[in-house]
Length: 115
Length: 114
Picture (cartoon, each protein chain N blue to C red):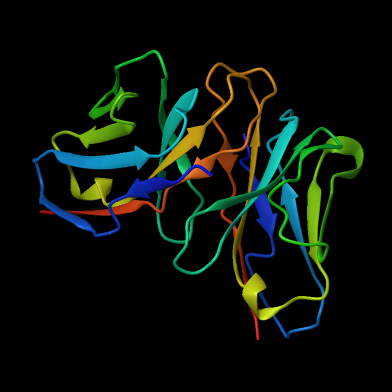
């Protein structure tokens, strides 16, 4: 079974540009999460989808970030316009709606560098 | 807001010894406390979960304890092997329901020397 995949693995852009990150969760996982780790800090929650609905977006830093999950399958996270402080590793995770332990399966992450 | 403290200093141990990592939190106790392993360039991988009403959980060479009075979890790797070298993260899940955000600690890097 394929795990969570993320694309691209790395992205280097200039301040002010737009970047779109993609996440493909494990098939059948209705929960999809976005997290971010900036340099030297802990992994922090951004938002949570259940199918195509945003369940919790309390971690989104500002309105330059837009996440979508059309059709309840893959998700995209767009940063527009990118700022220097957006640099970091963006992780996507997925999990089943009904699970006894809320284990989350993480993708390898997208490393974003904003110059 | 909830704060989680893990020893930021790397833990260097000899192969065969037991590694013990700590995870301390403030404020309310979580419904679940999870431990993940992260290797360089990869995402976290789930290892173990312990519930608020459980004191101890084991899985193969791993053991987790949870003390809600001390607001602390301990993670033990017994008979450590060089392959256990990685960063270990504790994560809090505050709600007793499937599908919730996790609050992570900064992680502790473990290096097992042959």
